[in-house]
Amino acid sequence: MAGLWFDELTVGQTFDHALRRTVTETDNVIMTTMTHNPAALHLDAEYMKGTEYGRVLVNSCFTLSLMVGISVHDTTLGTAAANLGWDEVRFPAPVFIGDTLRIETEVLELRESKSRPNQGIVTFMHRAYNQNDVLVASCKRASLQNKRPD
Image 1 (cartoon, rainbow, N blue to C red):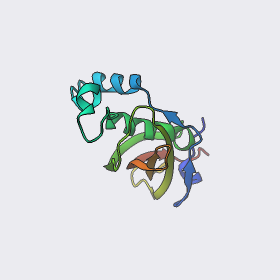
Image 2: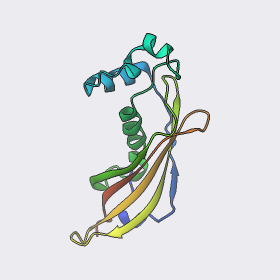
Image 3: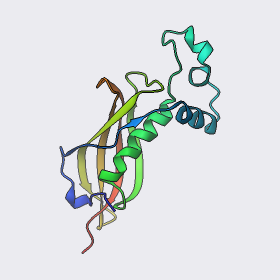
Image 4: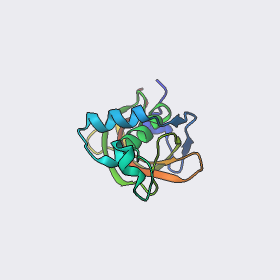
């Protein structure tokens, strides 16, 4: 277990996750085909040459999953009871095959659970940056987090 208990987190705490990840064509094709997404912008390199991007865009669902997944080891691994939801999901710049993503997470809010005395709700803000430090994705995530056992 590497995650933090509810009572070990503080508002404003920020994590610059050590793991960096270069996005591959295989990542993009697997996510796109697994979700039955036929969009040419994710799969058709020849078509995309004629667009404003000039190349295939990485599926934003992959970017979102990678961004949140990388954060788990430092924040919620073994200490979360449930993911309660994602909010304010944004993709302000495209991700391309070959981009290397860096993830940071900030604790925005902590509140005690009204119905579960051994748990609390944490709101995280996750941000993904490419190798040029351009923000490519962000989202708020609510986690039902366990408190440290007595």
